[in-house]
Image 1: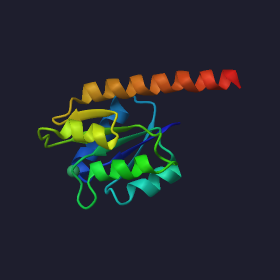
Image 2 (image 1 turned 180 degrees about the vertical axis):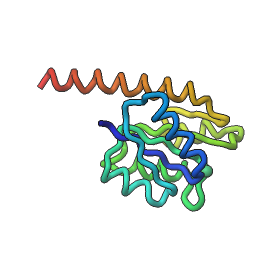
Image 3 (image 1 turned 180 degrees about the horizontal axis):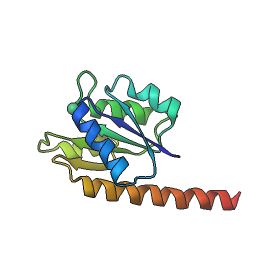
Image 4 (image 1 turned 90 degrees about the vertical axis):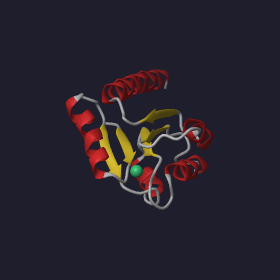
Length: 135
Ligand code: MN
């Protein structure tokens, strides 16, 4: 089963996301890390198919963490979706400039996020089966 890595310092937000995965039937395992410092090493070792990145993190923030991930050949191809609780003007542009492919501002529509996650995983599965068929 594919793993999605959540980088989020707020345990309540993390458990909301966990609920989306368990109740909405998202066919992936959710791994969770609470700081940007720990995220790059964990991403290298577990190779998630997607990273959900809270932008406001203590220490290294989500933008910087994304930049670190995008500089590392071992993690740069993993898509990063930004999630932010306190959206400020220009945040989306900054997130995209740092390398985030998608941007979700809170209050998060869990249904929308769940739908996007399902679409993403479905597209991934198709790509993987195509690659398998062509080898
Ligand atoms: Mn936060």
